[in-house]
Length: 437
Image: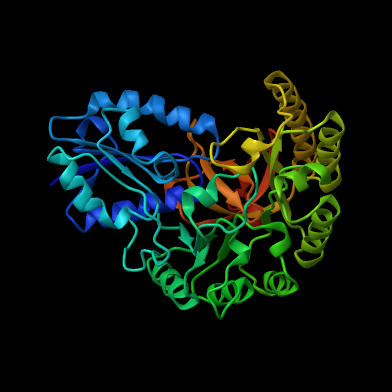
């Protein structure tokens, strides 16, 4: 049986796409291996959002080429493959295959051609492609990603995604519900709906509010998450659906990118600072105890110290539970390349350091306030270090606890006993005699 090794970089969408690739190749008799040295086919599923991510992949390709056997295949998949296309074959001679997000259906044929010595690239956009007939091979059963929307029509000036994922298109609601029903029948209890601007979902008849209600009604589903939404696509209908659908978790990842209205306008975001804060307030009115996380870019072209100060004050004003923070990275093909007044690298680095300090302080304050509370957690697996289990609350907080391996995939009631600022320690309440039975 031919063996395949896949490494995945980037967002949850890439994780979901890797599961699709495994499903496609499993139908052709391929068997997955976690050892690159044992693989006939080595694939790297890539991210192109920042230059750093691409440089990591290029470095990794230099390492993986040493595992390539005679007649073996080394391929680059995903967003970086889409962005660079055939140029990647020229840049890295050891690469045999370059396939974008809409080309995975042709993988078996492309791999066969590459194994016979024909290097190939497939980076054509296919507006109809949702891989409906492909059963993904997922890594675990208790929780699953379900892609409901592909591509993006928003043209933020800093973002490469419209160029790597193509135009926005949504799956039919009935197809999504059918997939979730299949998952719950196999024991999955938590689902995360994926899309580039997931709450702009519309299949021509149904909107995101309809989707939340329909998926939330699937028997056996206990938790429903989604990522990543666009701030101004939280319509009143969506907010009401979130409030009414019991399984929707109390966590929203709400990318802001900057706290300055002037910078947001340059980014071509469809809101200003005031509108973003209105969305935050609306979410908190609709969903009691909602935890908010975000994405923030520092050093966008033209960002002044005053603009940056507005970002710091926004972090304080919102009280984010956490934030993913980045230095602006020039992306060839994006409109921001043409914007002048680029911020010096040393200034970006210094601002990023200050931003991280504020984010951590605010997040730690939120976390400390939760110590001593009781929470429901889904035990996801073994923690990376020690003999502890890793679990997650409805508000997306990671908690570490002692317990048997049999707890993996189950829900437990715990008391949060301490925090590092982002991760919690927890005590299973079943071990407290007064709460047993």
